[in-house]
View (spheres, rainbow, N blue to C red):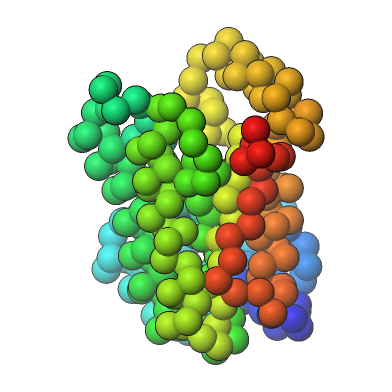
Length: 237
C-alpha cells in the first residue's frame, strides 16, 4: 500500500491492542485516527505519536454516523472494541451478563462496520479484533466464544459483500494488556504463570505482537475473508 496516503481509523484506540495498532500503523507513515469514549484518556495515550483523536461512544449509532460522515472517507478500519462479560460454566452463567458481553463487543463492532462501510474507499479493509475463545474448547468460556465466534462467522460473508474491499479478523490469545487489570493481581500473576508453562511459545503475548498481525492484514491486499490466530499456540493446547 502507499503508506503515506492511507487513512486508517482505529475504533477503541485508548489502550491495549487498539492503542498498539494505532501506534504501529502510524509508524508506517499512515494517517491514523484513534477513537475512544474518554477524550482525556485517549489524548494521553496517543500523545507524541502524531495520531488524531475523536471521542464518542461506538454504541451510539448517531455518533458513529456523524464521525464517519465528518472524516470524508478513509482506507482502513480496525475494530478493537472489547468487553469482559459473558464468562462462566453453563450451570452458573448469568445470561444478563452474557447479553452485556454482546452489547459491549459484538453489537458495537457490527454497528461500527455498518456505519463505516459507505465511507470506506474501494480496495480498503476492515479488520475485526475477536479472541481465541471463539476457536478453542475450554470450560467456562462458551459465552465468550459465542460473542467472538459470532463476529468471526460474519467475516467471510462480509468479505464477499464488500469486495473489492477486504474483511478479516485477528483472534488474539492471552495478551498482557490493561484488560487484565480488572482481576486481582495474584490471580493475574498465577494465570499468566500457568500460560507460560502451557503455551508452546512459553509466554503470554504483547499488544504490539497482535498489532503486527493487524498491520499485515491492513497492508496485504491479497488477504480477505481470513481470521489470523495470534495466540502463542493456545489453540493447539
